[in-house]
Length: 192
Image 1 (cartoon, rainbow, N blue to C red):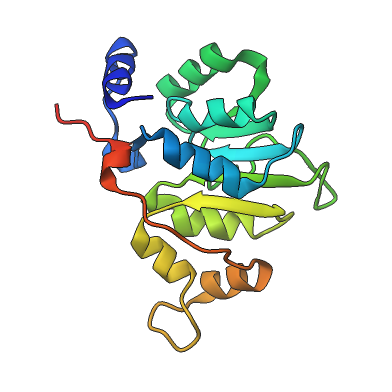
Image 2 (cartoon, helix red, strand yellow; image 1 turned 45 degrees about the horizontal axis):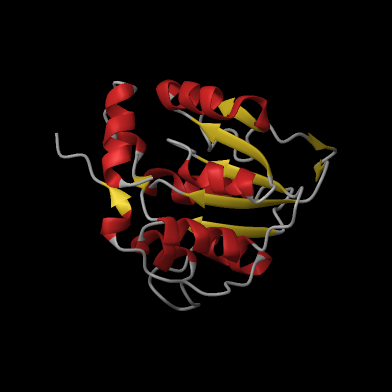
């Protein structure tokens, strides 16, 4: 979605982005494609998306043939996702820290199917959500967009001032394939 289309949709929904929820809407198709490419998705794979918002990334995930389990806290945006995607997206309306896998069911601490995570994480929940998802079962791959400060903490090296329990557990479970900068211009910024 373009910035203009995003503004128009938000006006249609009578919704102002809520800063406390970290609502930043991706408006760059190249970044969406890059996220999908980094996820190495195959048709029919299960993907958890945190905060689908207006559905920009969700659309790309469903077009790639993923079975999407999304978790959205904002009731207005959740209703929009329901109307836009219907039953093609399994939507959990709630806090992603409490429901880190959305409605993806687990049985005896094992996922019913292997899954991946592709998400644009709000800054305020990045560490708590990582802690929650690391409680297992673990996704086989995660493609996470987050603020640089959060990424620095999670990828901190031993002996560094940002190294903490979450970074130790995350790095024990996963290998970081790399990181890249996403410019502010790739996100819709509400200006009143």
